[in-house]
Length: 125
Image (cartoon, rainbow, N blue to C red; front, side):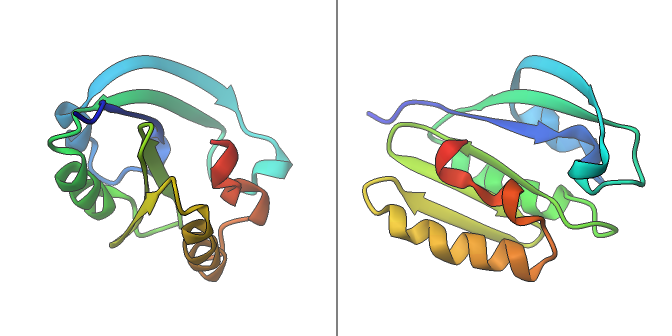
């Protein structure tokens, strides 16, 4: 039996906050942005730690990909001990953690979307 997925969503990345109702919110933390974050259009990041049931993770990932703002490029992610969903606007990667080379395609896609390389260190998330 698969375990639930946990991850972090940055609230400022969402165009539609309703997606949060489909997840259990475990924690919320606010961090002031710095020039390193490369997000000068916002003053803070609101990190929302979420939990998603294994039975609905794929569906929630697809819905989340449609909930991310189109104005700027963001990603969200959640994982369990077996899989890691990396979610961009209108694009979802489902990484099998036994095949970590699959991260390369997600990283390449993120770079093509203008996301800073230091933010695409998925293996350490």
